[in-house]
Length: 156
Image: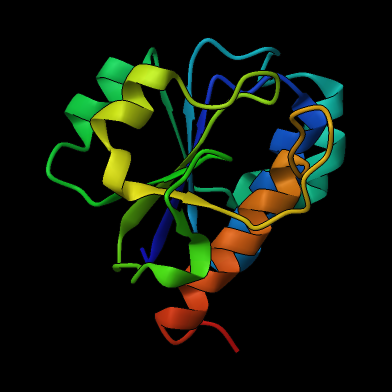
């Protein structure tokens, strides 16, 4: 498995559905960390993921601590507007984890501080209010950069 996409407390079912579709088509595994802002059976989630759900490699965790314990020793990249490095400046490793925070608040500060050197960001123009790209767009950008660096394994 080349890349693992981790959504920490996602809130919007349509974003998660779109991300699930991206994961299926890139051979990436999707990890969801509760609490979720929706039910996994919600029609909006299924509609945005279309008929890709049966092909999705999905793992769900009760909380961030369970995720971190379960993946201890793995390489993490934390996507945040507060990242030190641009997403294309890091060297992605096979079977690494790219973590994304919830739409309204991003990743928790304590987690960003714990993995400060592994925080990455997508360059954007400054705006008056603190804003960022849509979560599903951000996932697609980072997943494809990681896969590009890995030589697009098992893709045609």
